[in-house]
Length: 275
Image 1 (cartoon, rainbow, N blue to C red):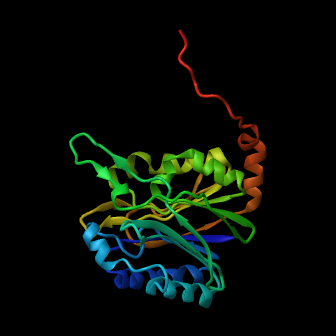
Image 2: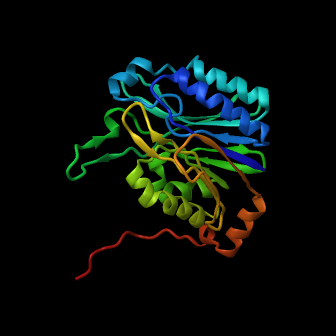
Image 3: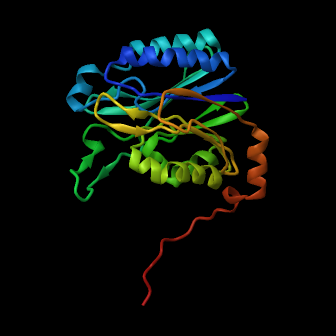
């Protein structure tokens, strides 16, 4: 199966972002990809909460999602919108992935579970939970001969999620992201390779890259990792582009047979300080 990750440099205008995305979706389809993943915040990368509130559209009848659904149907491909902000009734937003099937129907939805709330020395406190509401449900979806496990960006730091996805049948993990440059240089490759190795799964990661209109800079380097932890394809830069990779379910079966970590895992009691 051929899959694709689209690397973007999304801005503040959803229609401009869609105009950037559409030709790359078509390029991926014409190159033979059956499944295409876009990055986190593909359709709007907000400058601040107020700008997000002024632009984010309701989920029902969402105009850009409607166009992407049409593209999935027109080209007969799975299209996975890595994420977009969806207004909720409590004034916050869901950071939501949307997977479209080859006929353009919504096949799966996933709201990002892990939100980045941190106090960083020398910087202001970052509270993603002030803007977004965390999801509560892990999600897997059928994808031809594969089963897709859904996640978003910061989720990749929590191996228990991927273990749960693998034990629910996932053989391909999707990681749309908007990683900062310093954390990308330090952690991007090693975290994605670790998630592949420990679950014996393929990982496809679609990234934002470059300097964005909102003032953020993101790392890029969209990549695909095989179940043995090898990077099999990478856009080794931060420019927009299309990454293609071939994946084979036999490689998942082989990796899990060689290192049966999913089968060997056991529950255990937490550590208790002795003495």
